[in-house]
Length: 152
Image 1: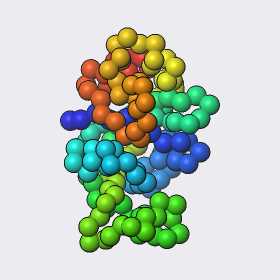
Image 2: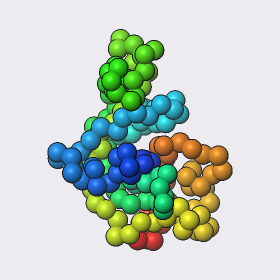
Image 3: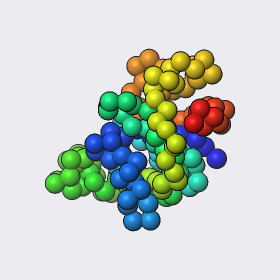
């Protein structure tokens, strides 16, 4: 099993939005970074555990847990000219962008803030805390996952 952190702005799509979806499952669309796309396309597997991270908000942090419910498939939003993720260069016969489906597992009992995570020496290798890392999807190891859960 793999462990991940996926970021979303709560005003766009937050943990409560995922909770309200049918079967508490939704596709994770709009990823337009090749490195993040490659991780979703090549490495994410059904059952992988994912921290839901609220970004670009008053108190950025980890707010919940979800799991990968469907492995990668072409991101269909790129073909819809009315969608904000439309990509006119995309070719349906040779997809550039992919997405996975994620399923709500639970909310954390509290927001584990970015500020708090930065103070933990045990997390110095966490991709989220690396200077200049702005990826919306990042891997983590089992030790990092367990340590973050212990903060709850």
